[in-house]
Image: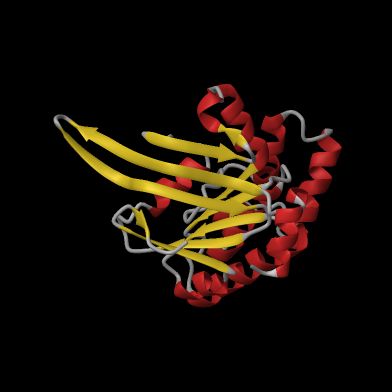
Length: 242
């Protein structure tokens, strides 16, 4: 046992805090009399401040697991705890609050609202939350975030006026607007060319370091997986490396 581990045992307050924890979860889809197990007895602990990648072939269950972690889906069996709270005891209203305030989502296809500017897209989750501060504070935070991701000169541009990489930067700023505890990224470089994808990888690393975020990335990108300090793989609904 390392000195750090021994210290944590002697003083539990120094032990790493579990931010996301799944215990023996299954996800089963019913199709008439048939059933399909997409996740099979998955157990995983992700600690506060970790940067972890989840990779594996298509159909392995990666996105399903990420959706459960993000409260977009529920396990058929097993226990999921978010920041120490058992999710099975949480009602839908509170789940929506957790999704909005505590989790930032980044997707492959950006999902920006085309009729709104980059600035307005970033502000939207904070306006929905109704507790993100005054309108002036939200505007200030949105502008600061867009500047941080390199788009300080593109605030008034709509999505169709931005490149793919720029749209993903807007999506990253939007994910950060409510100052979440966790970022969940589903193939964040999957719709980008290699060079732009590397820029997004570098940005995620920088934000993880500067903001001490817990970041979970699902990816087919070997380079993105390799830069994460922790990496797990999935195959046929099972975790292969923990």
